[in-house]
Image 1 (cartoon, each protein chain N blue to C red):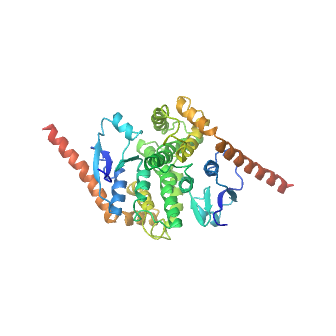
Image 2: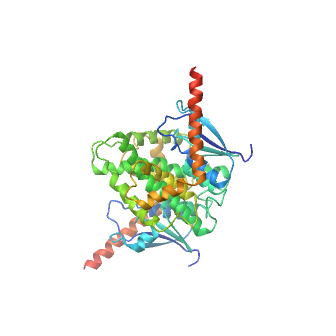
Length: 217
Length: 217
């Protein structure tokens, strides 16, 4: 359908990642922008050539926007940001601010937090990334002590990305020494668009559980 | 000066990172686009409030484009890509392809290679990120076996980012089992724009050595 936006995610995931699967970033952005969308799925268990043709690292999400196909949650958000000023202001410096904080979330913060988390989950005694992660949090804490949102004077797609990146360390108790970061995550996650996005993702996977249970009977 | 583009980098760095400091990404993009630029510096040794005001993580590079100020090499490249079709095609699907591979370089590949490198340099016996990095290389190898450049049918800013990300594992011998990746890095790094960017960065830091030596005498 021309102009139809479709988010692609898994048909099912185990309990642990629910609420954190990155289709949530796309749902959140589309809710903020007031753009309607459908959700379609690829199998979680058997990631075949169809999936790899859309996402070469066998991840989700990816997006259809009419005829346009795009993968990487970060790229999908940049694409959506061009469709809506609710996601990225058009004034040149405010747009530059949005881009810089958006990339900082991906490449200065998440580049440390996700590998830190990976090592943390492995149970290795010494996590060499812990000090580096704390440095990043300290710098960001100083910034967020002085402002409500990262870029411009309003909520932007940079806040969607940074808040979603910080949610995992926050939920693991790693932001306890960074009150401005904790308050920022809470502020972002209290937005109706986030709450709907998270609720819808949880419902999507719960419906998959129910369908699986029925198929077994 | 209106419209003047200025890359900010360090006044000096030790020998090891020379040729890899990320101002190279900006030099490379500007050379590809044929846009003139100046280079300005902040102290490497004493990173004060002026530096933090421009780059809150005390890193380089950052960029001036007329009155616009922007940090994060990834954000600077996206900003520059909007100024030149030599960096990002304007056809919507080709633009989407460029964005997705650009973000894949930052968030699917570099998110593993840089923390892997950090742990590797520490001398820790078991690098838990090694398997994850190999998976990323395997997937990317399959893609680059079938095409010259990542997005569209021409070189784009996505290739600047991905090639620069892959240069470090390549130079550490970690791409030996991935001939398509090795050939891709060689292809990118043989471009005149890359060669000039690297040469200019090396010359910049050599001039700083000379100035330091003179100051000592």
